[in-house]
Image (cartoon, rainbow, N blue to C red; front, side):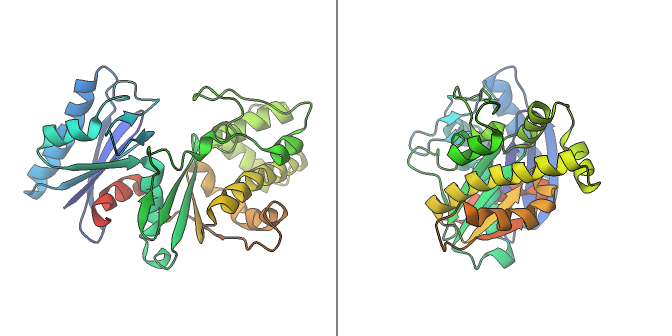
Length: 304
């Protein structure tokens, strides 16, 4: 059995998969914030429960909202301070009595999508998460590309470019502080919360993303103009990322990826910001929804 563990700031979920990545069951618990020991114990208990249910010692893969330096095994997780700076793979391996593999949660998401039957034809798959934050993961020839220090794919911490600032208005462009310590990171613009921040600061009204989208489909002229601008801001960033990585396929995940209009609008907006004659990559909606994180973490045992 393969155990995929998706570790978030509020919950930890363990899902059990067979070797074909069919999901068999899942269990989740709140993420302990009190101490590192409590955090390790919560994961160990989930694994113990799965072992007892399936009468086996499953292979464990974890996805974290940060990055794991594969050379040192040290994790850097901003929203789980108790586990950040710890050698989580070594400590979990010792606690569980088996090897543990781990990756950034966006890398796990991208791996899950790359291993979908109809996506295996693509040599390079870029997963972009437009959720609470904005992040990415890159799969090359079926394997995660995490970089030397595990930071590859931290696309949310690229800053806004010239074209985006021009679209937002030079004199009134909102400049947001990012949790990483920098300003104007994509994480605070292309995420669901960024969508809401921008609408609030450019249109003067605080609305949730679902309400903004509802008004867009209702034909509200101000909202339609805002969404068209937001699509172009997204396109400036995705075009830069595409120019650098040249992916065969881009898969969108996270709450904002459910905004179906993006799949019509982005392919039309991208050419303006790509190199001349550069093809627009295939853009798809994620297939596995909330299960992508655990599925991708389990799939870490199916790659090199």
